[in-house]
Picture 1 (tube, rainbow, N blue to C red):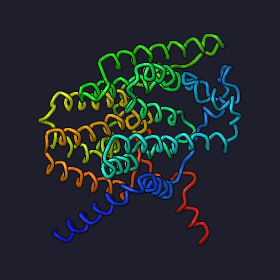
Picture 2 (picture 1 turned 90 degrees about the vertical axis):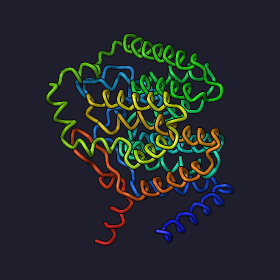
Picture 3 (picture 1 turned 30 degrees about the vertical axis):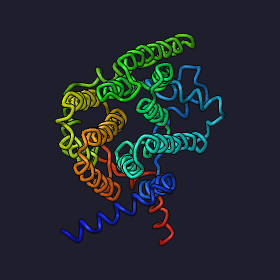
Length: 374
């Protein structure tokens, strides 16, 4: 055990030194490692890419249950940029995700000490949100990902209002993710955040949903809503889907980041009980939503990753503010260990009650290398 602790301490000191001078290089190398490890996968049914050919007409030929036209932003942007081929459309989606990582790294470095910022960035790479973002190229998730990053760090009410309109026009996940982030930020007393911020965001999200309906009405596009789809399936179906691999399903929501969250809550709970109770309630609320979704891990991860990240760095901030320096250092080192484990162990996601691994992604470096050896 002492040898293990010595190795971890040396690694921690090296990371602190390296990230102090080469923070963005360290984050870039970590993203490259993630891409090599997981590869990227294109969603099998490319609804949004097909709609991008002409997003202003009803697309029942693509799929008779065209609920995907309730998320018009990505196809409209791709259409006007001329990104409608399979390669260009999915490359655009990948570029959004990579750009979002750069944005997240910038905000973390600006607000946290370098070593902690890198640890939080590494935890995001180990989070199932990264797994599903890379495995489901062709979905509006890249835009959703960018929007939740901005909601996590922006303090401007006007900026958040614009963000709410745009994000609601992109995908309904924003209706639940953005208000929960802002409520947690207010409970944490983040600088510049008042109760008007979540109120303004909710109003903006409502305006964005009204804009979606206005768009559909203007171009006479009939959709099969997601609510109708969930209600059309028998309740026994949803129970069976969620109970098929229940322990694996629950673990897939945050993977090793569950451990990181447990570490932070145990360390800082007594300093702001209300915050951590509300955080736990958001997780339960997200699961209630996810219960009625076919893409189980994807929906929960996209809803919950930003509140989880906020919980982690707010806990560390609390320990600093309460002058719990020794506890802070122990917590930071345990978070580093959790990040290392999360990056190295196999990841997976649950879809339609079945378990999938990134090794099945369409573009996978290890599969390519194996093909050269045959």
